[in-house]
Image (cartoon, rainbow, N blue to C red; front, side, top):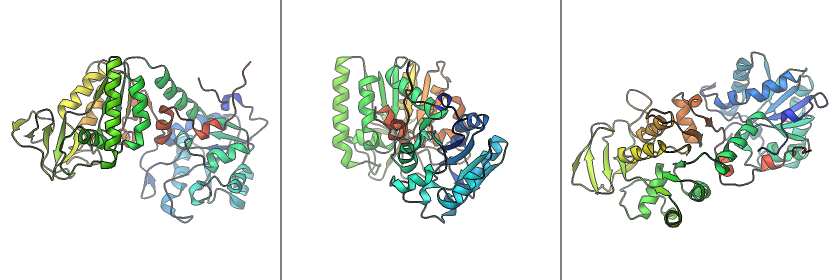
Length: 431
């Protein structure tokens, strides 16, 4: 249960000036937002506050700007998109602190919205600078934190300002924390975790946590290569983090010990899709580590004809193979809850005739299984930047039970760590 006060616990008649921290770190190309999922997820909080006749000032960041004149990272396109979604004007100020921001905030009438320019145009934001936080605090009477994607950072707009103004949670933040916490602490079982991505170090804590609480843990993405290398397999020029091999061995040992205590599966791919480049036109093959044979195929996942040839020095493993993908999809048929964080292959490569590339078929199998294409549909919690980005590109975001807006924040919460941007908010009053 969420223990912090939310906007529904607060009387905004006494504090009509509201400073809202949102997560509007959205992809923008040629001045236009290419995916507005995070903006849309902020709407329930924004709309609730407007119904309370709040004078609403929104602060957010975008990308990694090179300086205050980095127009490619301006939030102006977000203001335009938010205006359309709310069906009312959203004012925009060219700075987030100082005279320009303060005048724009003071000119607001009840029920009006102002979005301020990128917080990260000022380096003081990420330094949690006290004076910068004071400048933000002058813009509101109460602080509302609704940017789940940033609450794992102690920045001026997540920590500093909440120490100067009374801080409460928005509806998105409450939903994210409640959903993820329940899945990690009280899941409907069996619980399966699918963990992909590039580096084990980025997810070592949740791997350890899932080994302790899940019934099945399946590994994919480039991190699977490191596990395979730790098991002694040759992987050609595949992406392998040599420095993480000892970590992989420790995790494999822990998983083996856990499997001796109870019914538990830690699954590392048994076959993979191999090519000499990540180009969509590259010839793909399947290598099966259980037999050390490679099969030539015209297009994955057609049934291969095995040939006696080990993986070449210039080959790269770029996706899980059809057997591994099928095993994971089959395990999902027995699971009640599935947590998915990290794609299983190089999904960034588009296909020749569509968005599904030659190294995205393992990921597509996971999607099909989660959406019930094979009969059973488990509860699905999806997180991670690359995972969410891929399902957004496939326009499938609304098809899952919960798609998290936070990458690092969701990982930290799953690992059981305290989120600074949540800890600083006001506690609920209990009778």
